[in-house]
Length: 322
Image (cartoon, rainbow, N blue to C red; front, side):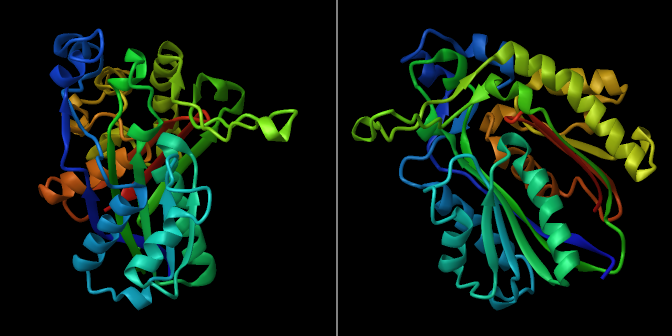
């Protein structure tokens, strides 16, 4: 086995849609204000599905699109910052629901870079263990971590899941990558903090809501994402002009525009769906990839750059020959 390739993609989002006008009824905001600053018009918000439910829907879609049998899945990795539980892992729940008894399963937490991190990790494990098939999913129900009275975060996020089915290949598909963590900046984006009390009887056992320094994250993304993409291209020994599609984490449409400008690449090469889904963290790249493939906009043999960035702080770019 030389490498692994993507043989199926899929995504799942809750049916319930919350528009900017809906949010303006509970927050001091407006559709114009949100669209101008973020590019977001709508987001899908879960009413009864947890992270494992969305992830399971994706796993079933991936299997239905391929000839791979459930019992042949060797690995399931779920990237999420909003798991159902601390334990069992969301991936283990998915395994049980689809009866993939052979699969090794675990979650990873790398926030909005999680999907790219998970693909890189799954590929390495497949190559090391000579495993044939792996399911990689990014899944989030961010709505359960939001403070819906905080305008700075409540308008940004949505719920959803997306994923890929990876299989052995004799050809090279991962051409290059760049993964980096900036732990000294980690306090700029925090969610789910759990305090420890000096008195164990006073432990609150309550996770904190999402907090973010929006200006710092914007500055970080517009500076570090272009660097990450350039480093991954150098690693792959290809030029930017050879990339057919740039699929960035959907955090803010202005970030995508700025990255395109800094790379001197046409905006038409950058997929965008933040207007429909908002920021879905680890799910965003996966949802965008699945949508674009579903619309036949990426052809076999074309080169894509998957680039995630966010909490940690982290960046992660993969250069993939589809």
